[in-house]
Image (cartoon, rainbow, N blue to C red; front, top):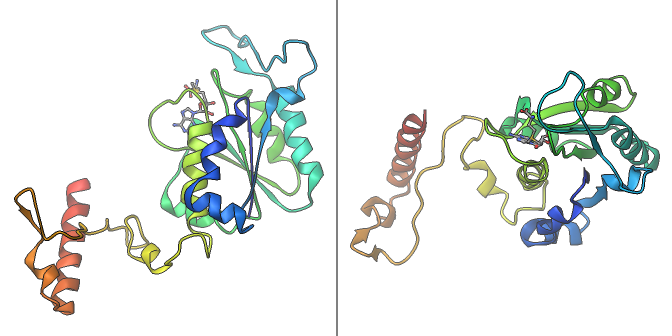
Length: 226
Ligand code: SAM
């Protein structure tokens, strides 16, 4: 899968060199690149923002550098692009959305800063062939920029690509799976730690009882989280 991020802080994406995603990149399961939006400005100060029409606090990201940066990505390939514009006003990112997006050929993340990106950027690319626009929020809070939101999405989507997680079975039993239940509590050795004991059933070797205990705990946890 191809993943591109456009940002004024491309260095923000250095964690993608690490851990399972770094390994998946080395194995060419993921092809990632970060583009600096300021490379698509034409003034000495590399300006990407301006005052909002209608007045008000803060600055808005100008459409021209965004248009040129996105066009440069489109020009490099003919595959369909999912243009993800990160915004707290977008559709909520969930495990279901991650599952839908893992089938994509190319995810292009537009990471806003300031008060966000001029609204015409989303409107314009909705009319462009081979581009699908998704305005996405990772939760009901406001971040300083879209980079952290893009990292969250990239990690949640990438781990669903076959081969990225060593044991694919671990994906099936996880929280937020299709049934919607959360995962049961997990324990490892030692059996005693600071006066706390692992539930006896898990050490019983009785697979039927263990499975039942896990189902009950998953339901109990899911109810508590509602
Ligand atoms: N003025 C905007 C509003 O109230 O909706 C907030 C802009 S925020 C300070 C700057 C950028 O951070 C946004 O353009 C977006 O890219 C990113 N951002 C902030 N919160 C986010 C969230 N919950 N989900 C996704 N992106 C977010």
